[in-house]
Length: 123
Image 1 (cartoon, rainbow, N blue to C red):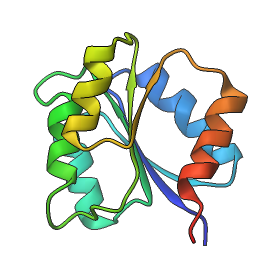
Image 2 (image 1 turned 90 degrees about the horizontal axis):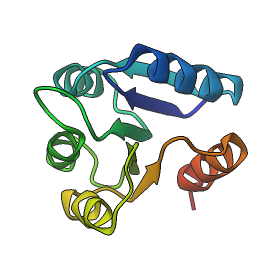
Image 3 (image 1 turned 60 degrees about the horizontal axis):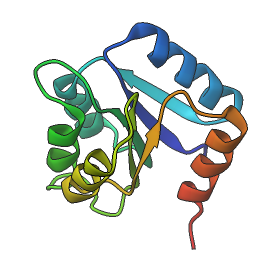
Image 4 (image 1 turned 30 degrees about the vertical axis):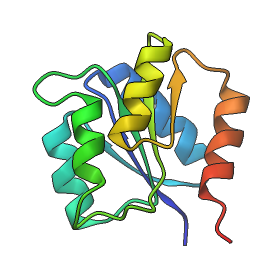
């Protein structure tokens, strides 16, 4: 059974691009345009990994990450924040919110695919 990845971004172009890349790698992808949509989706089917955009209206990626670290969600699920800006402050904020990592956009697709694979490796 393929790994299930939740991709959350309010930008349709980014959302579709990431979903297509992941689907080509054989992952099952669920797309969400907002934090609320992401929570509802994850409650229906728990993802194996979540990719969250930082800058979104209503609920930003940090807030969403914090919510996804609480029951009924898995605290073991890898969460990666995606951002157009990359500062040490943002990195610290992402880690404090419970993210495993924060990646700067745009990113090299080969490195992106490799890092996703590493996060999903099960012992």
